[in-house]
Length: 162
Image 1 (cartoon, rainbow, N blue to C red):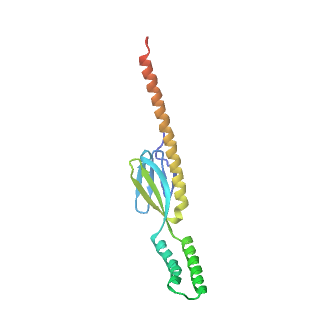
Image 2 (cartoon, rainbow, N blue to C red):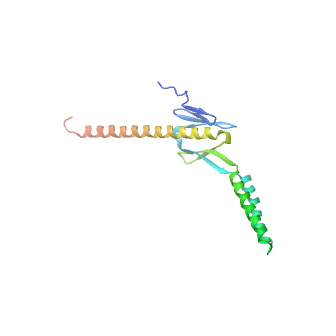
Image 3 (cartoon, one colour):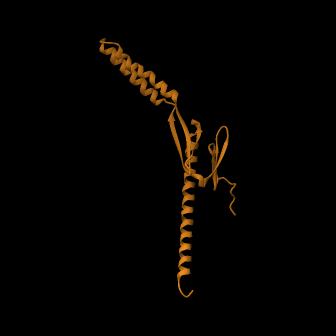
């Protein structure tokens, strides 16, 4: 008899059981059966504040165009400073991380992950993906076994003399 209440894996992002997962977020917990999950992935995007911060160095790149026919050294210094600040703003851009779950009926569920819990989220998505593959292999084996049993049963009914 299997104990379904013993988690296979658990951390700050949620708990993985044999038949379902419990997703943990700051406001709520959500329970999903594993057979209703099509895929799970960790995604990241750049926040809007960082994108707006990247516009500031672009002003330094546009300013020499408005200067007219002034000294070329001043224009080059504005271009260099603008490029340096643009590269710095790209490197320091704030990212938002989410666990994205696509269900078998086509719905998407997103759980926000704090930057401090990024490694936990990577481990959680990896273990859930591994469990999904294991459950998929089990279901394919059961389906093949059922097909074989039905084929044997149908040929047994057709054979004469039995």
